[in-house]
Amino acid sequence: MQKVLFIDRDGTIILETDDFMIETYAKITFYPKVFYWLGKIVEEFDYKLVLVTNQDGLGSDFFPDEPFFTTHKFVMRTFADQGIYFSAEHIDRTFPNEEKDTRKPGVGMLKEYFSPEYDLKNSFVIGDRITDVMLAKNLGAKCFWLNDGRNLGGGEIELNSDALQEYVAVESRDWEQIYEYLKSVN
Ligand SMILES: [Mg+2]
Figure 1 (cartoon, rainbow, N blue to C red):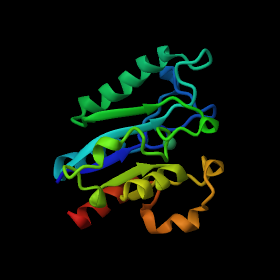
Figure 2: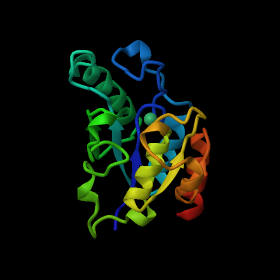
Figure 3: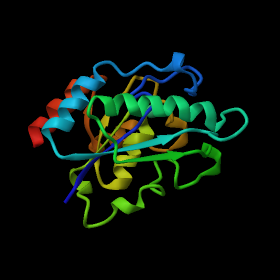
Figure 4: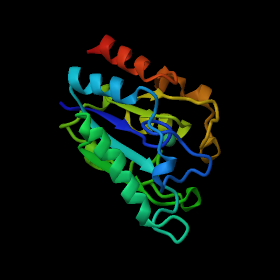
């Protein structure tokens, strides 16, 4: 069975910005050491990489597809240049108040992974928000929580982070800790 790393984008492989929109090159900062540690994870272990991101209002007038996708493609190409390939990208465009199940922590975009082909129990979500921890719970997986202390997205769900601790494999702001954990279970 194939294990998966469901990886968030903003705040996880690139840094979050104050306005939560990354549509210019100037706003792209890669997460510290992400290329080194994720590169080692790809090289040493057998996980499929799947990008899962909420991009509130993408495609609307205030957050048009272009230039978002121009910069997004640059981000993904830069990872590919380092040998880090994502096998799929799932991008939700809705707002929280639409309450769509495609929006994290919903699994509406991820139904194909609920199959005997995938080992969700030994898969992980890597993300910076409580909604990413919730996503791990909803997938039957565990989470690497790059918690920056802002608790962003906390308003979207009822549960507080204490109730979600059992789904957190590692809480750290350091990608090295994710690598070390995976090394201990592989
Ligand atoms: Mg994020």
